[in-house]
Length: 231
Length: 122
Image (cartoon, rainbow over all chains, first blue to last red; front, side):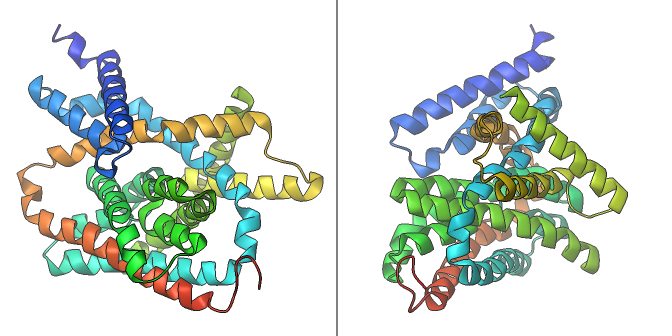
């Protein structure tokens, strides 16, 4: 049996089982942000690995081919982006200005805060992609030499921070236009924010997807270049 | 759907090739995403057509898989080891305070830039 536990088949079965359980809990809870399948599923996997005394890195190697699918999944994001094209044209100027400013701000604020609290260079490199969607974040982080797990963790927790605070925040800021609401959430909190925006309204969802794709593209372009200039 | 996968894989392959030939600091799949986006725009301009059915399905399936694909890398956060212990304060501050500040800044900027424009009109 121990032999079987070190096979890709076992790793994949464990992953799918964790996903099913996570999805069930997420749906049953009425889509509570803290129970998003990527978070709860990751916790389940971690608990299972600890309980079975399995090595995380060996498990990760076993299911490594799953990560291959992140490549075409990233390419696939071009399709929703293309569908949002007419929406983009309407508010192109303000959205692009906010995009450049916001994506830079997300990156810079994370770097400054973490640096101020004593984070190492490796951690800083892994935080630069916190506001972009995970498949792009993973590839960019590998490119610039950060730690993938930290990068994914920061992306997920950023998403959670975004969706748990936005309603309260934007109520205080008196921002009620669904287009602005969705765009800011998609920009700061990527896919997790986007799914939350779709719950508010289709318009908010569309603007969030737009921000998600644009922030991902802009950060993927800008971060590796910035790192190669400064490092 | 397989026709869609062919398009996605071919775009990624072309992206990987471009990255190597031009020595770009961008990941191949991100270039592939741009290539596919440009292809769709050109196709749309020439034929005024919607996204092909196969591609639409294929990309939908892959995007739906994303939460599952991301679980295993996310689980790694629990196995960073003792070396990461002193990194947590910076990490938590960056993802929580940083994100809230980003949303406030973007919200206010976008509100200012769109002032005077009414819903859907310039």
